[in-house]
Image 1 (cartoon, rainbow, N blue to C red):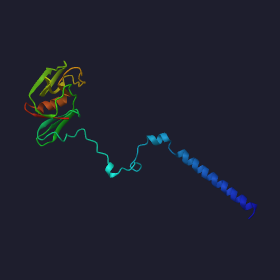
Image 2 (image 1 turned 45 degrees about the vertical axis):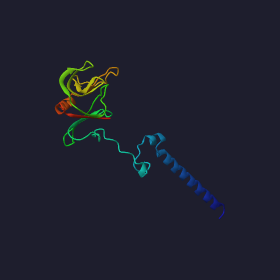
Image 3 (image 1 turned 135 degrees about the vertical axis):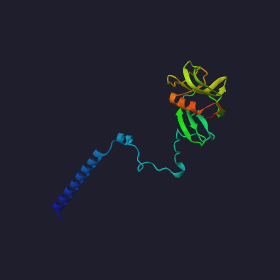
Length: 188
């Protein structure tokens, strides 16, 4: 083998390098950019594995009745959740809804509905309906109510108010459920 075989090998090497370069160029042209990779959601096959001891805690269902809310027919008011649950005698939630808390909140515990008013003016000057009172804290009557105009604004933090506001439809449901003496459980 003389010069012709070494020229032939050199030609094959050059062709092979050209083919590899071309394939590398094609691969880089079709690969996603770093920005595209960062924006792409992680799929189960690419997600980092989690050891059994590091399993994430399932997210709490915000609609779920708090475990420490007692038993039997009751109204449950979750201070942190800003939510009310109406619970049947069979411990079934019949209605749940979000509320706007007052500036004065009762401590966690069990209470009973002490008074009700169909329609009055709230301590904030707003016309309210379906007032269901169940506690007195710092000389302020605390209870649930719905503004006649349907509003649920944040209360003025400089005023002591006890009105826990809800939407009118929720106020209707609570009014029918929480008669005088009905149990109200307040949880943290």
